Length: 290
Image (cartoon, rainbow, N blue to C red; front, side):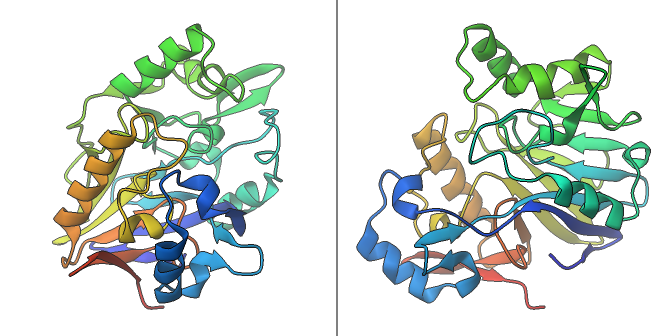
């Protein structure tokens, strides 16, 4: 993603992996292949690989630099976690991208997690002498308190495959005293605030970035792919509460459609950033021009 400017804020991206990933019929239980082919034919070709029949999915972290803070939003899958395929892809690109941003671990002031799934909180911690410790020693990590509690409870009853994501990526941050467990309406300052978008996970949140009368929204996994903007009812196999996720997606799309709001979905490839347009048959996603 090219650097994006929102007032006095700059947003860039660190990519961990991208490329063809899953077939839409495997990702969306309600997927209609006839309508899906029609939608894909209308979309930017960057979102789909016709050779493999797979959607192009990017795993990335957004670096948000405000006049006061350097912030990471979502931290991909991390390294040394021991995840099985397909989550065992190389992690060096994330570290290389982090360094290419001119960053050191000590430079990060805040880490925001839209939710606590495997691919959004992985670089929260790193393995040092056999212990998981916060990767960013000065940072405060912002977790929704309901999201944290839900995954703590699920972990305690053994319901978090694959692996102990909460124990590796979240619990050590709290133990180190670096976590902020917050509510739906948390605001860091006049630039950064949360808005609830539950469903994909128990208390999924979007991260709003506002400055100079402009707004961008990191939407996490509210949408994994542009197909879900054309058809918001296509929930993923990973959703905690599919109906709640559909309602959150529709509410958000209706709110931002035909406005200047820039949308930043974590998994959209290429330019990533775009705007939502209303249409007679629903919504369309238009990537920002380069």
